Image (cartoon, rainbow, N blue to C red; front, side, top):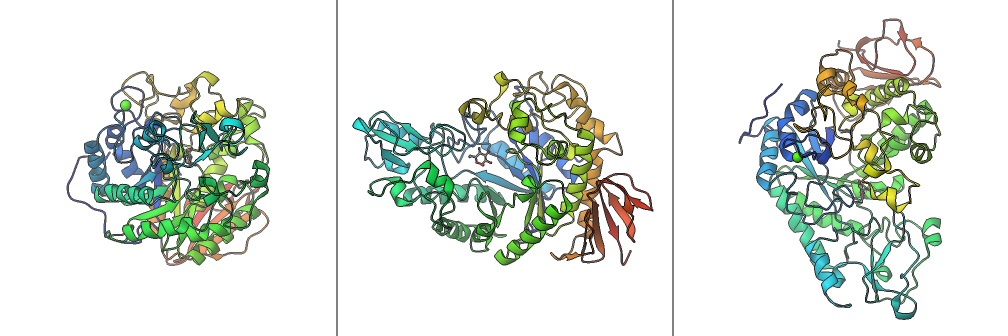
Length: 557
Ligand code: GLC
Ligand code: CA
């Protein structure tokens, strides 16, 4: 294990394109590792386990929010953008984390949540304490209610987490929260809001942060009539769902949002190397391009693989489209199978294509019973395929262990606001946020020195522990380590040429004779020519088994 000692020297280079084909490891800090035994993962836990990241061979870490927060939405409700949550550590710990990661050649990307603050943010407390029409209220998206005394909400809009999107302040004013009521939406029409975020971006960039992941980057700008004042009638929820022409939705993906990111880009480019940014923008594929342009954030998440069934034609389509879109933007594409918002991909691939995951989870995740062996086989094959694609791959903590979703957390431990706000219709996202198992035994499987973990780990977690997988040459952890190492040695220009594929086989070639072949089918196919570099499961020289990816070296070997 590489010791994670603090160092002042830095081994990250000034390469301005480091992010283009990086492997980025997402840490959800409260569930990664707990150094002090209070059941909550913390920055010290990450520092102590930096050896895991080094061994894995990732290029960067993306840290989900670590800011002070009441956790109304897992930390995406931020009280203070320029501080560390006391239960996670201090700014000194943060600086040490930067220096430890940099010393190991690993970059750090932090999460920025600009659409909304928490309801405990100083600005929101000031807004509540100030009268309607005041400057303090104007920092948020606030409108008078309708009906007598403003007792009815301005519109019938629903929050993404269920329930109404407007909350009454009690004096005829209502504030907009596209997410939980504890997440009031900021008014991005205001220069003061814009300036404040530039200050935040500078604050972390000056501390050595290499990039930013921008939370719901497409929602910031609201139609002026939403913010208030204007007489225009706001559309109904029905109209919102029916859709709007590109860029004209009252709050989703409005064109004006790119003015904001141009100013962010100017700030990022003042640094050497320029700070990178990746947009979380849930917009139609062709609308991602503007977020990913070099004069914008520079990269945008492509979430298509989160929603793509296990199917050769579907994968081919997603790859083709996204390579074209990223080329149009001048960015590299991103490939994502799992994150803190989605059912882990081992589990998605363990149920039949077309399963309604929301209903399946609501019923406890046993009907149908997931075939986890198959899920893992497919997940490893899919991951190896994506690791061969041009662009960057985002790995969510625990996927390197082959960890399935925890589908049967009891209702009384659930933290995700969607569960309560949808009255149980949606189980929510806690099942992919259960603290990691580090050791095979022990009351929190080595997550921390104590017995506690803020979400309970199931009995079977020990089988996926880091310690155990390190001792098993055929483990998913060893597979990730080997795949990342092979990728690093084979990586070249961001080019791909398709090889002849059949109905069930997806095959392509990268520069230097690096060939990736995936058999999506249920039956083996003949092994293509070339020297086997790595396979997602054991292969022999003659056959590529069902649901398997292999990398082959075809020239210059
Ligand atoms: C993003 C985050 C998600 C959060 C939401 C609101 O989608 O990934 O976890 O709940 O934004 O901030
Ligand atoms: Ca802790």
